[in-house]
Image 1 (cartoon, chains in turn red, green):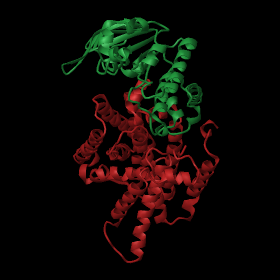
Image 2 (image 1 turned 180 degrees about the vertical axis):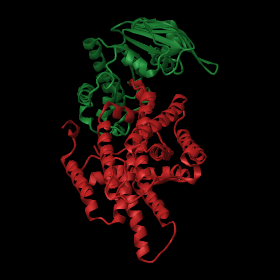
Image 3 (image 1 turned 135 degrees about the vertical axis):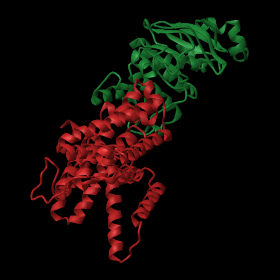
Image 4 (image 1 turned 60 degrees about the vertical axis):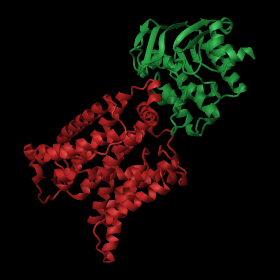
Length: 332
Length: 239
């Protein structure tokens, strides 16, 4: 297959093993472990989506909770009000988020807003949505939007009503799809152009790259991909509060995975999500078992992890790990 | 091929370029020389679309290009290098050149083939898989040229690519440009301080001083021009 061209055999074997492991995981995992598995995949997916903007095209978004929230609300509201299947609703989610991304991208790239100022612009839009949705009566404002919950005897994939296992597999599918898509993008002309823009916009432009257009592609694609995570999030948790879903801490949370794992790498978001979610939850369990009930231990652990990685592994966990495993550090 | 018509550019009252005019004939090699601050790089940037001239016209193959963006100028067939090199430091040498090759080639395999061939030509073939950040300055200058060539330009703008090279390295790269000019009909406009290179390469020379063209002609005519001797070549030729 063309898409596998040049992929190291070892890497392929490891990926296949990982996929097999993830596929059989629900058959051995408890409900709790399955929930953690879902979270890891969720963060791996949104991390991958965010990585397209920051890791590939070099545009720092600190407001990705906007796309999670808009995606979640669009599909959930259509389901609650009109009984529309989320598979139809997600079209609205994708459309809304792609449009939001396009507006932010246009404002920023057309008027030369870059670097930290661009990051602030993305925060501003997420905050704008958070406050706006608090007063948006159609989706019940600050009192929250709830999806009807009942006991289901079997999984209803069409309406996304069902067991955690179904959601786990759905998220696994999304994560695997995002991985393959990013892999293909990185080897395409678009991917090369993004990396060129990240490394030197002037040089990229001098080589004929329409940097406005390619930055727009990155933002719109990243936003559209993130919206799908929002849809799954809404139907998994069954409740949405603007104060939570659009909150800036959610934006930060979802970028930590790729940062810890390795910005701009394919495998980084996966490794980062596994490390952060897995270890933070494991730590909580361990402390609970030891009878230590300290609030905020997860946050402290995040902080320590970030510190260690920044100090000792400035390019993330994956690049040095890849060299150890004798794989290409870029994860190609 | 390239017609620069009375272009001017000021930066906050400082007149960088004053009604400069010159032409680059198809298949020719023209050198743009002058003391530091004479406006050479400003003229380059105006041709390449980095900024528009305040007045005047730039025509490239019967098309006015002074309002185009850099990527449009590149797509029109003008490749450029940067005086202060701008490699894509995090990418491999080959990937750097592939970015240029993608202008005319959509497939990755095709772009890789084009890039590899150009790297061989410029003597960087052995370094293709290294990160661009590992290259020495002379190598980075060659990488600039390789990237620009990968866009398959009709006209190549070279901004001081010989500066800092040893004489033998300089001769090597001069030979490469000669060959490109002879075999592929590549037209070249170069800014250069290294007179050895300019004299060896350029068929015609344009001399700038304080943003104005003070002389133009063949290399022999220019080095004997009184105004040029006074403001630029003076000390060198008196020795």
